[in-house]
Length: 261
Picture 1: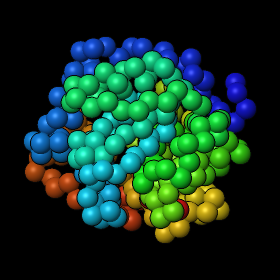
Picture 2: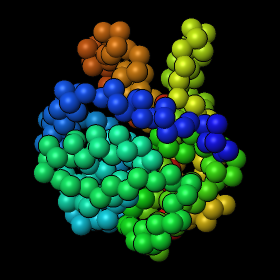
Picture 3: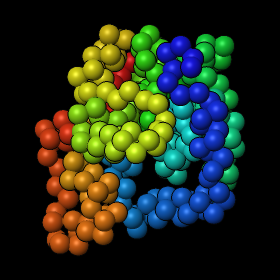
């Protein structure tokens, strides 16, 4: 295992290689429905609202996504006029991302690189309006964990925005599936989740300003991760998908850090 890194590129290559052309088409159809307002994905709506509140509009924003995988989150931004740069150490992931973007006639800039060693790409630093990652930082520990958080800040222009999504250590929606996976002997991608306090603290000591941490809507998470797969979604019974910010930030499946350089 690489120092400070819980997951090696071969594990990611294996995961991304399993994504078929048919699955990419399905993902593209879903993204198209969301972009046209015919389907709701709460995380996208939240991210779009954050950018629109900060910048007024998304059009022409220069966005970089670290550990991008398929780059789905940034693709949503591109459909509102943003420009995308995707960074991932898995060449297979970038190939799949390029194929996904092609369904919408978008050509992202793709950079194959380990985010911990991105310093050789000097032209990227202080270039972007937004540096985003979702499901990246939790795969690092120790100084590498801090270094990846700081990298987001180093990539944006002064006053630029960073957005970092990670799993929530305190959420039963996160911990229970991992617990049962261990009991059954199933292997999962190595990761160390965050608490809201740790995420905010690490960002502040790396120099972030105006830090905020949002939790994924708890009721939405219970619905999507537990009830819907069992065939009992809350909307079936007329239960409203309400937000309870205090509970969301403590028990929501994932956390989103938003901060400025």
